Length: 308
Ligand SMILES: [Zn+2]
Image 1 (cartoon, rainbow, N blue to C red):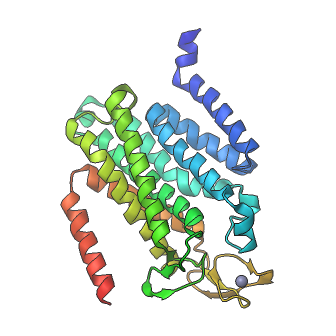
Image 2: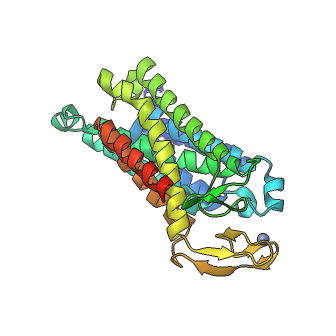
Image 3: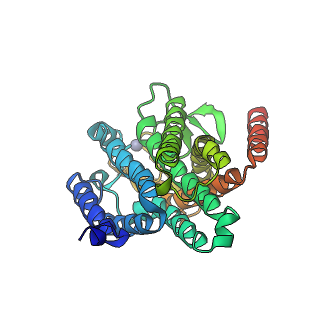
């Protein structure tokens, strides 16, 4: 009996049913979001193991709570997620599909002894952490950053102050939240790998263990800002003719908004997919121990953007 219950397929179904029921009851997801979260969650539980699942569960629950945080106040200022804050399949796949692929990658690369010995599962785990850290940082920074006391600035022109909720707007509070999200995920992964290494088979050496926290923090910070940058440059945006806010919403201040730029079919979901892919790529590069390259690139990026 216990054998059946501890089989990952059975335990995964049980856990997903409980988490799914809870998430639905708390209005974190609508039906389409529930079904897609079930698919993503179960696949990660089955292929990536308990630790990987708990890491993405942290994202899912904290994003749900942050969205609900002062929801009425956000709704009044047109800063809230649509659909009463319930996430649909677009949100779930936008943030979950890339981690899911890396989780499958972890599983496949661990099947062959040679490929596993070459360290591939850890690179996949680096991609996984990178994607989840980016999405968590981005979602939490957007949902909490709007409470920033000072007006946010535009990422493509940091001297320009813009209304809250503007696409590509960044604030110090948001950056702090992003940092914290990366730190939390990194520490979570580190503690699992340290205390229950059986749950994180992808981490097999001391060096890999030490990399986890900086990898998560850096990908969260860089990935989250790349998301703002992609949003500001590529995403279709509309201007509210009442208050002047630039948003991705069709309606603002109870009036229809006007299209002002970006690629028409490029929505927030595409931006999230792109940045979580970039976060995963960064995670792999960092997982391969190439910190110097990332830090060097970051230095030149900041130097170039502050001089222009
Ligand atoms: Zn408006």
